[in-house]
Image (tube, rainbow, N blue to C red; front, side):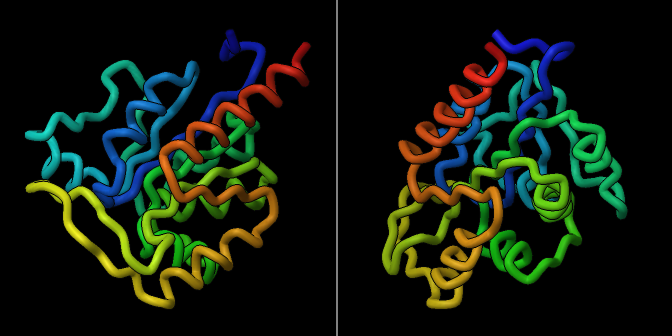
Length: 186
């Protein structure tokens, strides 16, 4: 098992989407030594989904989007994190990342992880022309715009970036990254 003293931690960020939010948080809960970065929109969405059983982990260090300068991102400069996972990632977050805009906690974390060469895994919400997604009252059909799909493709080209489009893809990417870290520490 990785320990905080010997190895950096996993940074996990959530944005304001209900698209596989429950599954993303469940996978995050399975990770040892993880910190959670929660956007202001994610805080709102978690409250909307609470009656469906979605909650933030209780025994995890949580950083919320409450400072204009996103103070917690300094932890990336000090080597606190081996990997950043953004799951789920809204089309808004993806668009800002692609354009280099970092005006929220999560977009700042994405930018700083890139600048510090921290490998990043992003579970993009809008990855197909037609999708089913969970809303607070049940499943709905959505039709991502062409610009949303194009931005996901642009993000795939970023350095040290893995973009996934399913819960299974997210789990596999996290397992692969964890295995890579385990091999390098032995």
